[in-house]
Structure formats: structure tokens, C-alpha cells
Image 1 (cartoon, rainbow, N blue to C red):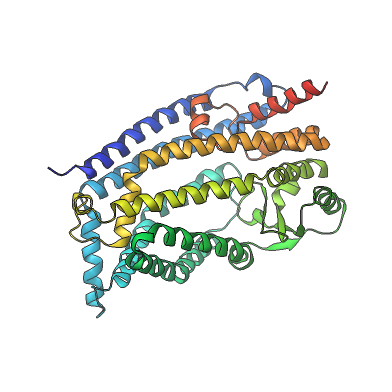
Image 2 (tube, rainbow, N blue to C red):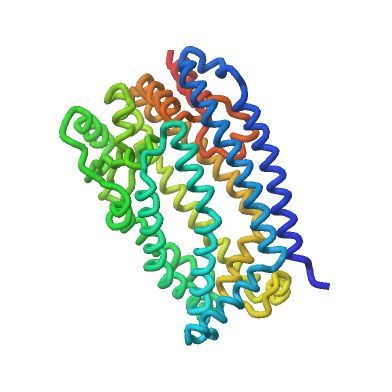
Length: 424
């Protein structure tokens, strides 16, 4: 008797939904707490706390509904074998267009086109409600309906342009890869990721946002001096018009080798009281670079990608696996989808481990900025970001341990203060 792969996958999906819902309930209870955590009393204003609490509760209620609908749809699609039904219909659509349904590349692209249409239809109500109700209610949404749909159309157009060549290449590699399939797939994905990281900030991101050089002045001079003191090869320093879509704030850096760039959200510049707070945030980001966190993360992702493809090569020819999910053929894309579902337990463990490492990196980057003399402005900058983004002030320890890639504010401030005490 064949192993019931489908039932096992759906069962685990439901178990994970129950477990994560339990964590969500714990976090929802934390959002309801009427007082600030003791370390934040006198640090965060009561007005900001009340706004943060209301925002967090609104998002939490919405999250419960969204996740419930998602698990119902996802488990139903698998259990009732909608995927094989849709695969056959996509082949029939090709025949209707006068194309060869036996061509796996055409068949796969037809299938993906249908999936994209379905995803847009089912995701749109939730996305609209999140953006134009929740985000707008709490003063974050700044985009118009026209801008929202313009961005969506651009995203779809990019998928249509970029997606087919990538899908076709993957199918050919799997069909021709032989015993070295995992190596070829990993090599292709490595090259693709490097190409995308190169062209995204130059060609794709400007389609959605306007990037302008940070004007000459004290802030620019301080950032350039900081980068120079750390031998960070800063080539360009941009401000992005994040305020056209949201009042959330952030900063990030990107680039390879000697061609690094730093991007500041205009909202970050508007919200921070002084330049030192912004420079302290940049010092934290540069700490990630100086401590090789970006390189370590990239290597970890590459190792995990290779292992995933290695696992895929072991199961891609399993007729029992495909038949369990309702397929009488073994298309490349379907094999990848089924494999991703079968390794969900490992993915959750890996995600949890990566979050642990990421939180450790955040503490190290904070300590790095502190050693540069930015303890006070970093502390003020972290508080300001927490306030202005209305981030959760009270966090459940189980929820944050499982979900958070960044430590809660209370823990980060405590670590900065602890290092100050040790210095004294």
C-alpha cells in the first residue's frame, strides 16, 4: 500500500495552523495588555502606546481571518486534488489556442498564468482591506487607489516578462540535468540571484519608487565620514520616496564588492529628531557588513538551496508521490511544488533556526554601533522607529521566539544598557 503523502502533508499543514494560531492568540493577549512593559515606561509616550496597541489589535484581528481563509483554501486545493484538475484544464486551454499541450514549457506557463490570475483574485480583497482600511485608519497609507493598481499592473507585467525564461530554463535543466541535476539547478539559481540583485535596484526598483541623491549637507557628510572610517566602499547615497505609499520608515544598503549603496526612506529623515539618530541607524546597518553578516546569510541560503535541490532529485521520479497528489504524469513544476509541500516540517525548523541567528546578528550590530560611540543616538533612533511605525510594545516570548527575525525593542535596549553598565 502506497504511503498517503497527500494526507500527511494536509494533516501537517493543519497542525501547523493550529500551533501558529495558538501563538497568535498569545500575542493577541499581549497586544491587549493596558500598560507598557516596565523598561519602556517613561521611554515611550502613553499616546504612542495607545496608538500602537490599537494598530496591533487591528492587524491581529485581520491576521486571524486571513490565516483561516488561507488554510481552508490551501488544504482544500490539495485534498480535493484541484491542482491536477487545473493542470489538465491548462493543457486544454493550450489546445483551444492551437498550441501543443505536450510541450511541457507551454503547459507549465499556461498553468502558472492561471495560478497568477487565481492568486490575484483571492489576495486582492485582503490586500485592499489591509492597505486602504487598516493602514489608512492608523495614518500609514499614503497611496491612492490608482497608484495601488498601477503598482500591481507593473508587478504582473514584470512577472510576464521575467518569469517565462526562468521557468523554461528550470524545466530544461531538470530534463537534461542527469546525475548532476542538483548542482546545475543550484548554479542556475545562484547566477539568477546575483543577476537579480544587480538589476533590481537599477532597473526594477525605480519603476515603483523615485530614488534621488541625498542632498549635500551635514547628514550626508556624517554618513560619508562614517563609511570612510570603516572602509565601506560607499558609491551612492539615495533617498527613496517611501512617503508616496506609506509613512513607515526604514533604511537599507545593497551592492557588490566596491559598489555599495545606502538608501534612506524620506520618512526616516522626517521622523528622526536629529542627524545623529539616522547616522546611528546606518552604523547598525554597517555593522552587519563589517561583521560579515550579509555574507554568512548568503552562504547559508546557498547551502539550504543546494540541499533542497538535492532532496528534490531524490523524489522527482517517485510515481507514488505524484499519484498521491492526483497526477498521472510527472511535470517538473508540479514536482517542485509537491516537494516543497513534503518538506514543510523541515522548512519550519530551518526558519526557526535562521530567526535565532538573525536575532543574534541584530544584537551584534547594535553592539558594533555602540562601540563606535552611537549608544545614545542608536537607543533614541530605535525608540523613534518603534514609535513612528507603531510597532508592538508588548510581545509574547513564545511568539517572538518563533516569528521574529529582530529582537523586541525591550531586549535590544536592555542589551545596549547592559553593555553600558559593563563599560562603566
